[in-house]
Amino acid sequence: MAGMSLLNDTRQPVWKRPKDAIRIFQVSNATLYRWISNGRIRSMKIEGVRFIDCSAFLSEENEAASNV
Image (cartoon, rainbow, N blue to C red; front, side):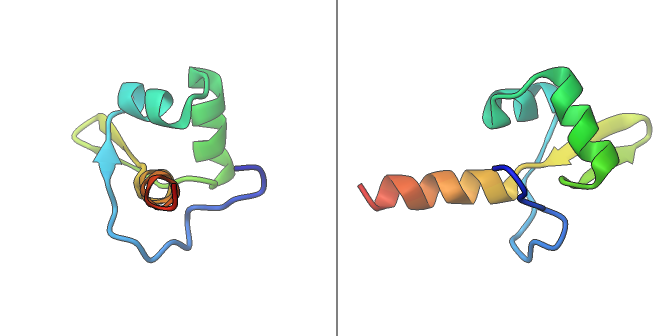
Protein backbone atom coordinates (compact mmCIF):
# COMPACT_ATOMS: atom_id res chain seq x y z
CA MET A 1 0.00 0.00 0.00
CA ALA A 2 3.03 2.25 0.01
CA GLY A 3 2.53 5.37 -2.07
CA MET A 4 -1.11 4.58 -2.64
CA SER A 5 -3.60 7.41 -2.36
CA LEU A 6 -7.24 6.59 -1.85
CA LEU A 7 -8.50 10.16 -2.22
CA ASN A 8 -8.93 10.12 -6.01
CA ASP A 9 -10.71 6.79 -5.95
CA THR A 10 -13.92 6.50 -7.99
CA ARG A 11 -15.23 3.41 -6.18
CA GLN A 12 -18.38 3.48 -4.08
CA PRO A 13 -17.23 4.40 -0.54
CA VAL A 14 -17.39 1.80 2.21
CA TRP A 15 -17.53 3.80 5.43
CA LYS A 16 -16.25 2.05 8.56
CA ARG A 17 -15.49 3.18 12.10
CA PRO A 18 -11.78 3.70 12.89
CA LYS A 19 -11.55 0.50 14.96
CA ASP A 20 -12.81 -1.53 11.98
CA ALA A 21 -10.54 0.36 9.57
CA ILE A 22 -7.52 -0.44 11.74
CA ARG A 23 -8.36 -4.15 11.48
CA ILE A 24 -9.03 -3.95 7.73
CA PHE A 25 -5.82 -2.03 6.92
CA GLN A 26 -3.85 -3.95 9.60
CA VAL A 27 -2.15 -0.79 10.85
CA SER A 28 -1.85 0.97 14.18
CA ASN A 29 -4.13 3.73 15.40
CA ALA A 30 -1.29 6.24 14.91
CA THR A 31 -0.73 5.13 11.31
CA LEU A 32 -4.43 5.41 10.48
CA TYR A 33 -4.64 8.98 11.77
CA ARG A 34 -1.34 9.86 10.05
CA TRP A 35 -2.84 8.65 6.76
CA ILE A 36 -5.90 10.82 7.40
CA SER A 37 -3.79 13.91 8.13
CA ASN A 38 -1.58 13.24 5.07
CA GLY A 39 -4.63 12.83 2.87
CA ARG A 40 -3.92 9.20 1.92
CA ILE A 41 -7.40 8.02 2.93
CA ARG A 42 -10.79 9.68 3.11
CA SER A 43 -12.52 10.27 6.40
CA MET A 44 -15.53 12.21 7.54
CA LYS A 45 -17.11 13.19 10.82
CA ILE A 46 -20.85 13.16 11.36
CA GLU A 47 -21.91 14.77 14.65
CA GLY A 48 -18.51 13.99 16.17
CA VAL A 49 -18.41 10.38 14.97
CA ARG A 50 -15.56 9.60 12.55
CA PHE A 51 -15.86 7.26 9.58
CA ILE A 52 -13.07 5.98 7.30
CA ASP A 53 -13.51 4.98 3.63
CA CYS A 54 -12.15 1.42 3.26
CA SER A 55 -13.47 0.78 -0.27
CA ALA A 56 -10.13 0.61 -2.10
CA PHE A 57 -8.63 -1.92 0.27
CA LEU A 58 -11.75 -4.08 0.38
CA SER A 59 -12.12 -4.17 -3.40
CA GLU A 60 -8.40 -5.04 -3.83
CA GLU A 61 -8.87 -7.87 -1.33
CA ASN A 62 -11.89 -9.17 -3.28
CA GLU A 63 -9.98 -8.98 -6.59
CA ALA A 64 -7.06 -10.93 -5.10
CA ALA A 65 -9.42 -13.59 -3.75
CA SER A 66 -11.15 -13.99 -7.12
CA ASN A 67 -7.78 -14.42 -8.90
CA VAL A 68 -6.85 -17.46 -6.76
